[in-house]
Image (cartoon, rainbow, N blue to C red):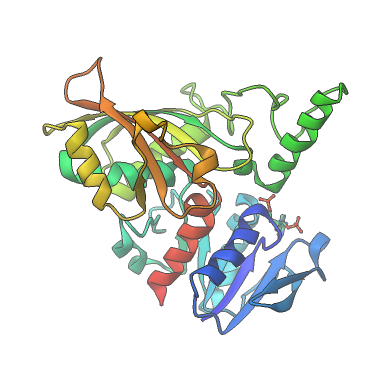
Length: 328
Ligand code: A2P
């Protein structure tokens, strides 16, 4: 396949290049695009140097375009990139809620990808990480209500977000004033319950993405979901604490057995050995870690569990390449 990456110099773009290499994706030609700032930079793919080009405002001569350059760029340009036949797998939120555009997690709804009309949307990172664990439980026990609180890494705000955590932590430790640009407040030694814009209903757009996207991917437009999304001072990998009510009888043992068999999931649930999902252990992994699986004490027939997944991989680059694999 002729592959193009738009946003190749960004946090997700760099992971896309690595994931293509590691999954031995059959690439006949790779073109790398970014903003004019990066044009001419060299990036290595399978030992060969490739030059970064300016993103075109027209068709991209490729079979698949993996795009991660932000919503504004994708909204305007994705239809042009695909106009000569390329399929755009778009990591931004620009197309996810368009009823004509499939929103795909290959472990859950691979068949939806077939209905594409040139663009396939890659879900929000927080949604994807929860969904791979929630879906097998939903199929087995019928989830009716989901309440989730997130612990999201700075990588969710791209390479600049990760750099801000490092720079401002250094400022804090060395006694200099601590600033912020990417985040609404200083991020070191803080948690910020504010990701993306506040909506009229009091939730943030990030929180509503989890609601809208989980419903669309699961094909469950009525599923009751509520989310609190929080930025924490970690570099990479998002964690989420979920409480889920089910319609059919469930036990932690039965849930664990279902999750052991589920694709894209690694059960890490040995509290007696201090083993549970954490961002540090989930970083770099393709699977999402699930653990702390227990019976919820407040509701009948409900479970609590904790997930950690690499935001740049299952939450972005890996899922995009898996979608491209569906097109092979
Ligand atoms: P550049 O590095 O040249 O700015 P991140 O999410 O880590 O911030 O990365 C965003 C990616 O999107 C980068 O590769 C960035 O390129 C690219 N990008 C940003 N703005 C544009 C634009 N207007 N056109 C094309 N690519 C863009």
